Image (cartoon, rainbow, N blue to C red; front, side, top):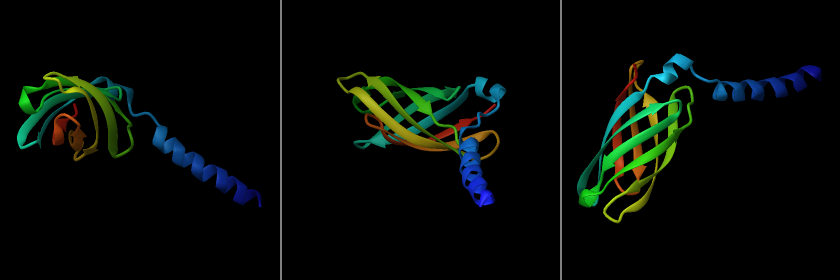
Length: 129
């Protein structure tokens, strides 16, 4: 009986611990830059971004010459890093919402896919130092 109770407490606790264990502090201080190319309304869109301490900034250009910036918040999981963000764009595009995921391809390279309400769907390629 006691073993069953301990197991019911221990297994979920270890699961939550692995999700919320912080990564190495030194790795978090170095920015992780990426480039992004996508499309919306038949036009090519592009952006550059950087991430540090689970926050990111992405500056991009969308359809009709709209330029803007997004502030992103990442959730660092062991292999993937989903994110959400909000930004502001010119040319009467206004507020943009974004979300996506970045996945480590190798130790120093990551790929991603995302959606931005102004710039549309996009693919990402970045490096880790």
